[in-house]
Length: 70
Image 1 (cartoon, helix red, strand yellow):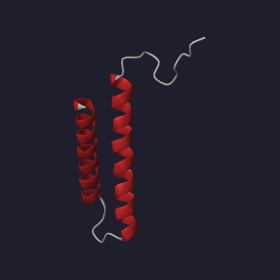
Image 2 (cartoon, rainbow, N blue to C red):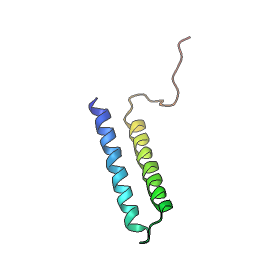
Image 3 (cartoon, one colour):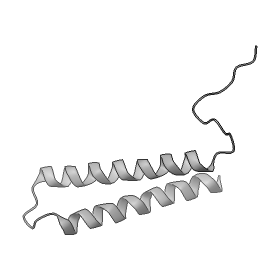
Image 4 (cartoon, rainbow, N blue to C red):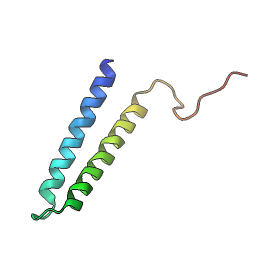
């Protein structure tokens, strides 16, 4: 439970950080499409971080394939 909470909290922090950076980088008169793009990029980066953390912290050597019993 603690691992899931920490993973969710870190994903939220990454999302907020990327969204704040993109709001500073985008030119001043923001349109609705700019807000959608900022949210999409922030979501993509946050999910990428979650994926990398899950892959790197698993105990199994082969993450994508599971051996079946014969």
